[in-house]
Image 1 (tube, rainbow, N blue to C red):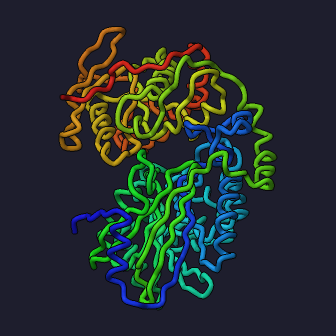
Image 2 (image 1 turned 30 degrees about the vertical axis):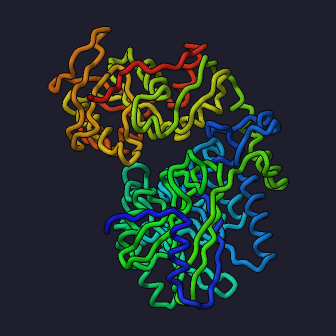
Image 3 (image 1 turned 90 degrees about the vertical axis):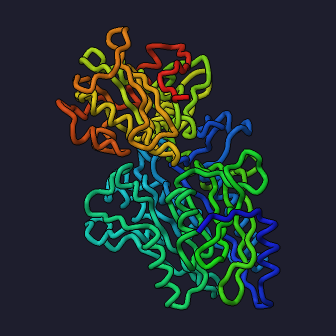
Length: 536
């Protein structure tokens, strides 16, 4: 079915005109997604905000602001007799030293204190393997869901992750179903015992199971990304609302800089209209969707917006104090100044997953510089491994950790030129989807054609051979440095896992490599130089 997207006003008018006169029930959905361990407030570049900047009113988000915003809205709505649920669409894990230090336990503690009603698993929840979920699962009392996963064979997760749940909201039965992107198998570490199923088939099965139980109000809580949410809405019958995550999409009712309207309306196979919402990432916004159902459980009204959690939202004092307590052991080390930059270092995901970016050059240059004397000529880093930008001025270790939060290590190996080309083809194969595999490089330059078929997009590639650029030779063997995640086949780089020669995956931490390079080249001047170009 062809996607139909209408503005909120047109949808509400159409629904109201066609709705019979029946008793109606309203549900308020408060939601976040992709918090990525931004326990503390963030700055305008989505990295941890210094306390003095927060005091000056220049910061956003953090769990204390999320708590205050949710408590305030929930309290007002409940006092007015309204129905409220609070949902998280996944990726609480990975992104700051809170995760590095507390391994999910802090995320669970704050989610429990805020009072979430359900959470969908995100891909980053598997970054430390299935057992890495236990610090979260052991801390929270609300259901954690993923309906397209079979975890029965996994010793850590068996019986711990539900397919779906029915929430009793003041006597109203609300079914919550969930799905996780199958890319998790490549971009995280779920292990061999977690079986991924087709999202659409799994969601339809869960809808049918709930419908058979008499549940007629069904919300899909997904971590698959907005394009996949649209496909789900078009394919699955019986979903009333989709609350999504993964793509960090900023949906807004009125912001000209939005990625799309809030809500985004899509036609399902039966011709019903499904509202989709998402609230960017990193704790910067809280989504609030108001949905009205008729007696048959059909949506007759939906409207709302994302709420910016800026300095106008006073943080919850109790939670802020607990954040400060947990931050104490890590703040001294993270406050260490490692270097200085003369300008803004662009690390935004929309840039680094699609083209050469200044942060990609910094990280790839640092990687290559560290191991060049080991016979390494080429560095390839995944754009999805870069998680923030850095502003001009002094750079702290905490900022470097925010950019590179995964604790990856340098991996060195040898590849033929043909395999390097295959790696580049993989890297540019999913740019349209915003995939994290886009290759940021050093010691290498290449031209690619976005209009060509995936797998045949690289037009040319050259290697820096001691100061002279030479065409990539398919038969030659080159020294390559990447990170251990990619070397293991992550982000689709199976050629690294299958064909690498003389591999060593246990080099220094990537964040330490970048911090050292910044210090050695301080003040550092960010730049791009055309090493990645598109064919005209």
